[in-house]
Length: 230
Image 1 (cartoon, one colour):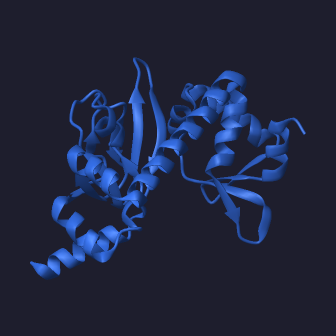
Image 2 (cartoon, rainbow, N blue to C red):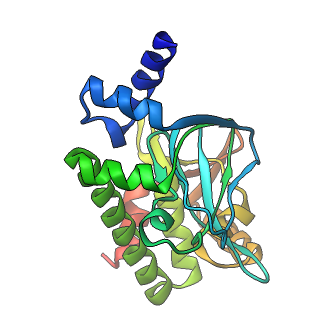
Image 3 (cartoon, helix red, strand yellow):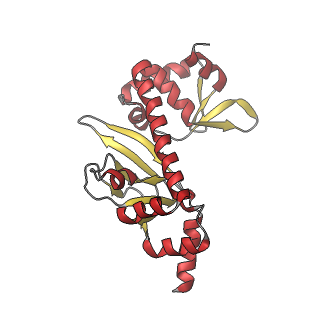
């Protein structure tokens, strides 16, 4: 049992939420939380539910999303170390979004009372949660600005840039993370058909290439500059 608790404490120490805690504190936290594993596609949190449990991602990825009458809206994907469920624990209101496992996921789960106690007891935990909440506000500000001021075409290009990673040996190119037209539409609040039209237009202009089944932005700097009106 002692060895198992040490292993649990070590896993907790690898998460940014608990990174500032001393070993004795981590062991105490390990006694108060539990771990759970979830298969790809499994629902973890449902929008509108009244439970207040808080989660931290130990491994794998989850997707946060909302469903409307005609389409879904992807709010973001969370990876190792990310926190979710904290808002309901703090304000006692129903879940503001749904969360689903994108692949095999391992989570730390804690009750609202444990989560709030850790915030009040440990300054490092409190500081981390504050940064998470402020980060969400900044992201929301950016998204509201995009929805209010950018056309669908501009939102598609903005999201492509957000999903792009550098290509080794090709400094101006960016390879786009695997994403379907429907997923891209759900990220920017539009229909799949609109995304398909814009991607086709970008490919015809040579701004977007398809290489080994992946979308590649030919010149990231040029596409970014065009969006900024430079």
